Image 1 (cartoon, rainbow, N blue to C red):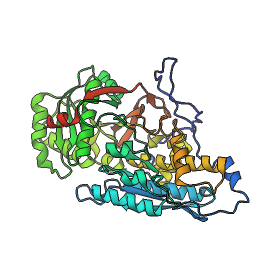
Image 2 (cartoon, one colour):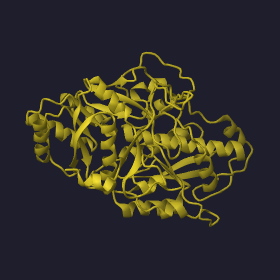
Image 3 (tube, rainbow, N blue to C red):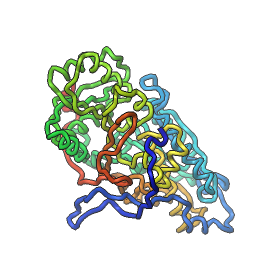
Image 4 (cartoon, rainbow, N blue to C red):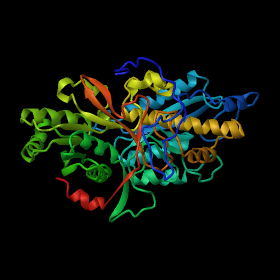
Length: 458
């Protein structure tokens, strides 16, 4: 599914932020930003005539070494985030084909965290010993961030390990001082860790869906149940839909180990309740089995089948008529518009199976390069350390990955999105309608105690 839609003509996009009016309100749709990630001229000039040195763990005169950690080999979900690893390796290939980074080759090490907190911890220890930074990681269960916070640098100082994450789902990783989270932080860092608290969530996509269907949507959210962090995040995502005016009748927990018969009772519940809306927060197989069982049980009243960005994939689209009509919500430009954006086009060309999660990992690579280019331009190619990388990365508060996403900072939520619908095997843009744009809206807020809300899931 490298280019499901062929864009008729290339559109030259001009630099623009996520628009705000005088009162701080978003004014989407907006063009998210510049289109090229060609090497920074100032950084390239700074390399000329310089004798390169080994300046940090993971930085030699010849190479810069990074590590991507992702949940891949768990029997619970085999191959879950393989695309994240592929994306970072593809990013390095692209960088090296275009002159490298800081006059050096970019080398990628991979570590499989296996949906296991112990392996997530071991991944940090391995990266601390061998890499300049962790880049593009996608680890769902990562509650222990001691190594991220205190990893010693080449001089023995506990600088910490830069973690430019694609998706940091665990609150501990999200809020670690060295984490820059591409996917956004929903629970503001520093808020209480128990009891009722406020979460920042996107509600606008759900408001739009409900408006398109006469304001009558009511139904269920399928919550992934196999990890505590997933159940926790599922509780406030459920409330985001309610805040978006959809009448959520309940959250239904589904397991990665589920088989189709496990969805029989779910389908019957949907049918008996008269629900016309089902949103899948779990994996592709869960959505496919849900649709198969719904068909088998004669569920015909659902007007909106929707899915998180994991369904934005060739694997899902290949299910054909069964899943036709499914909506998905992205926070990046869709790959079908890769002719419009040079960095997006490079992503599509260098990743065999681009999907919503791989895009975040690629963009984490773009963030890493932007920070390194900034260091080199200002201080030279021998100034690269974990400390300078952290300073540079954390100073970037309007990152757009060269226009692939709306602007955000290290800990902020994602404010911009695009809604797609799968029609005839093709993901088609629904909102906003103009190619090359994202809809940016003020972020919503919901208040709840995730522990209490989790007990109410069935």
